[in-house]
Image 1 (cartoon, rainbow, N blue to C red):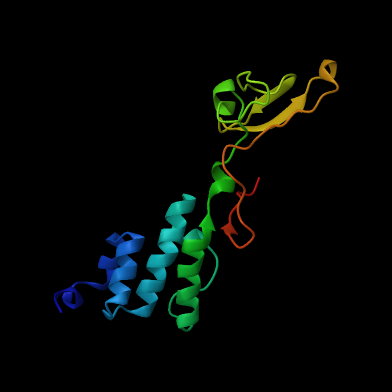
Image 2 (cartoon, one colour):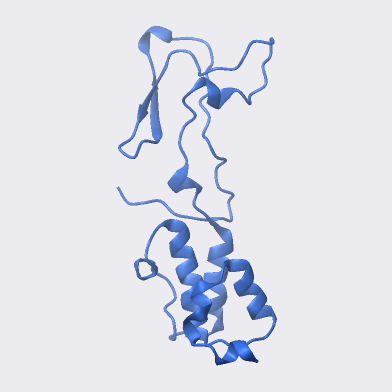
Length: 153
């Protein structure tokens, strides 16, 4: 096969779907290189270099660690790294209205943007006590079986 004559590092240029197709086609790829490719794909999603990820290391374990990196990649939810609070009236337009009024930012809420520009905190102004308010995140929370990541503060 012509692909088997390429240098082993060629798989680092594949997107995840193509890498799976190559594996499904039965092409022989060195296990350590293939494991490193899945690890690198996880790192790219997190905005890291592959060496910064801890977990199974290439070449020192069986095929189960390879499938672990693949599973982590497909279960990985980077939402916690990108999520923020909805803080403008435009952000709340999608919400249904009970009485026909247009949806808007909850009244009496102060939003505080973080150093990265995302709105991560809010507080209720003391003069606006009473009535219910709901602040909504931009993205849904991760499912219970997702692999998630949070940067250390």
